[in-house]
Image (cartoon, rainbow, N blue to C red):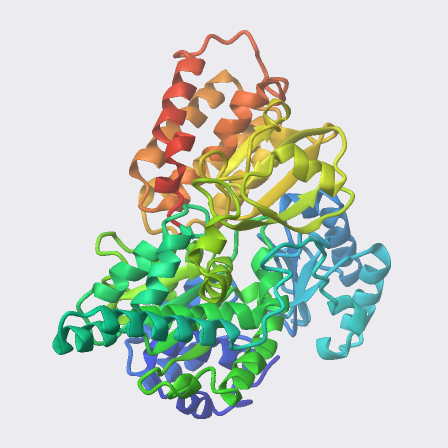
Length: 620
């Protein structure tokens, strides 16, 4: 095992200024060296940051990727997303366990290795995938399993495993304005500053007095903000709040300090578009964050990167360093006095709920990722209680294009209510999984045709919290006025059992509930247990009724969007694929205690698709 004196914790604490708000990074770096967070380690860190030990231990115990018990020199986590299950991840995991003589979820007798599952690694287009000491490995096969077992038994360091295993492909199948972008770093910023200067000059020239001219010329970045508002850009995290309005609210919130936060914690199963954007267009994303900082007057920005993308941390920091060298970050950006802004990457640690913006902010502050009560909203009281803009990776990339090309240009793409393009992460039963970028308004059928889908019975759009689209709905369009989406597009052909799809999603929500509120903590567990009972052949119509009843409670009483949306896949599949449930029931002649169709209609009315944005609180 790892000796507790293998690292001077003081060096790590000093590197982070002994700042408790940087606790996540302190814990991660310490664990990467020591292997786990022993009681004495947590005590030392608590003393170093000046926080109560219970608070530090609470943070360490909240996140799946932090360990307060020994987990072995090799920690293998198989992606347990439904698309990985469809291509044999469970058989491969069992094979690895047999070769290593251990049970899933347990540490080996010699303390060397543990093998378990994790919800989703963001590699749905190239599975079966796993994390080996939190490094992504794709395209697992029986041959790779055998070789991996041998390398572990010989105690070969993960860094010396075959490089090909760690290859992550972008799989861009269709590109448009974002993925085809060829702007050089700084072009969008220069265009924004030039447009601002033109607006200032015009305002000053048209002013009726010298004093009015001075006021007009010193209004700051109003022209940039107006272009973003004119573009009708809406948040790409799923809910679709208007970006310009969010930025304007933050800019006018009373404070001398503001922040920009990029939400790169795409934990929704089936979503991997942000991974590709950060690989191919990191400059565009950082440029969009800088444009936002200029528009609202922020001096500091954070990119919150999901823990499963640990392999992107160093490349992203290299991009940031290069941008500083080019005078695109730091003090006096592009020679503009007072335009000071820098960005830092913070790595998460395996908590889906941190995709919700207030939970993400809590995590940035070094705390458990529990969603806050709202109001107040982050635009007035966000990071460290200061006005904060939180937007998705794709949103910031689009904002950079708008700064360069203008709001009218961007609004001319897509539909009347959904401007621009949308990146879709297509996975499942298709010949060509990967990233597809379309102008808003594309039909589900068009995406299926482009991806090479055949005999499709259903598509899960926007992940488990989204909507299940049956084959009679494939004419519907990807747009905020029809099917809004954070980006996931999971395809299931007629050979798939839609009950098992919904069951996997129920297990996902039960695993990812933060446990803060009783309705969600208990409700998601009850839904999982009911699905397992039915799946194991012990269910009756009474259990179907119970699903509706528990769903009502979750939708009415859960603290945040995770609980509100957890019943979606069950309600959708019960409505559209009810035979998949009924053929598992012990007795089909049981008289229901109430009208099932009426109960379903009520449940869906409470979370109607026209009002989906109100419930997708883990988006923008």
